[in-house]
Length: 390
Image (cartoon, rainbow, N blue to C red; front, side, top):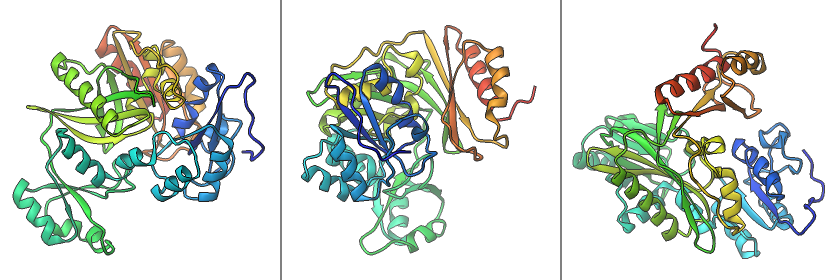
């Protein structure tokens, strides 16, 4: 990690600042290099995923206003690896003249699920029935309307299944309710009966140009995404078109700049929106090899208001399998087998310390035989994390 003065590429190319140095920032480095852009990531630790590959990685926390101001001073535009930056800090940066993309007002809809639900409902976007609850009585009253069990969420701070709980009675939420401070509430949502989970990825620039990728199916295991299939198999064309239109409408209505991921539940009647993310997203990692323009390149193009790239798929099918941490920290030992067994598989590891259940990488394969692609991706991911031993 270095806190040296910013370095810019010759020829007047801009320097993009990224708050956070996780795998999303890491995967921006390759397209930034291809576009001759400078990249500077705010990194809390010298061994953060992006800090290992991005030369410009000044030390600092996303919660430290001075560190944010220093990053902003050095860069032409500031964007994000995650949504955890305090909204009040972002407002200070904007008041100081920093170009933040997405803006603080847009990003708030990805930071605060209660704000997101209220705005999407106002826009007429299909959502689960929901309410804000502050005590057991309010939770029970909502459950009387929609039925038990109920999905309970902390409005801020949750990700990858954290901050989400399915409760069957008020007592199961007593610890969360008891910790609420004055004025705080939890988000209660109807537990949806859905057929599968989908995601729509779109990108939008400040000038209003927009682009979308095919709707994908995401497979969740224990609250974590373990597989993405692009495009979603068997999805009705009219439903895919409607979901894409809704995602583009959301991006426009919220004035999103950059990549927007809209996570959906497909139901018997259509779909409802579950979550939003305003940054590159796990459901879009397949685009690195599977699309003409990856989500990471597109995000950089969008935040700089460059013309957006083509989003056409390169193959009929692309499957991405996440690699989760297991009991084998020596990941490199698996490489000879994985590369020899499947030369067409593309393995991305994030340089993260292995912990059980932690996302540490992904594998992507593309082709025409979907069942075979799913087997190939799963075998490679499982072997790396130590599930397969032969």
